[in-house]
Length: 112
Length: 114
Image 1 (cartoon, chains in turn orange, purple):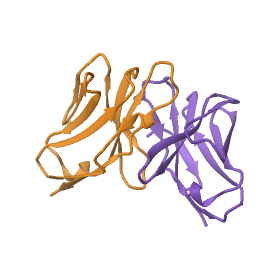
Image 2: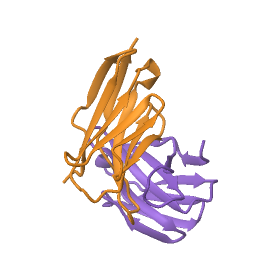
Image 3: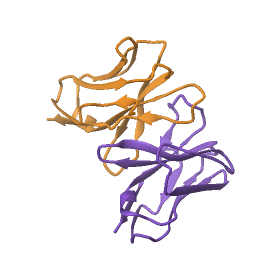
């Protein structure tokens, strides 16, 4: 079973507006939740993370929210910029695990 | 940028031939990983290494083997390539276990098996 689910394969947003990317997970034992960003022909790069003991983490235009009761993670980008157009992967890991489990990704297109 | 080099960047091969992909790092990081990225599947872990000669299987390890004889090099081998192994392969390194923040990826190898 897939432990991390990104149910929206794509999202289009107007420049300057808010982008909201969503992720659901099934395993409550994960300690950290992460978002990675990927441009074409490049490897993924770390964007932002949140510990399971928190419900919000903010870094500039990027904010990640964690709703543990709903097992739901979201990434907010405000304001969205054309350079944010990329594929976004959510991922999670647990203590003692060598592995990150990634979602299938959501392709964000920010329209100028 | 983290010092990770994947080679080759692109490769076309025929079904049944052996293929080796190389990942080289200059960061002296302990952990190294091989992922594959496929449409509709995201990133899936193939194998990982937690030290020289210490490796273990990931989610999709069938048909792949790995070796790590030096800290800086992690090789992924397809013993007999199949069309289902056409994919983009990413190497990653980290020096911290499990939190994820310090997982750095290479630029990828596009492999086509005809």
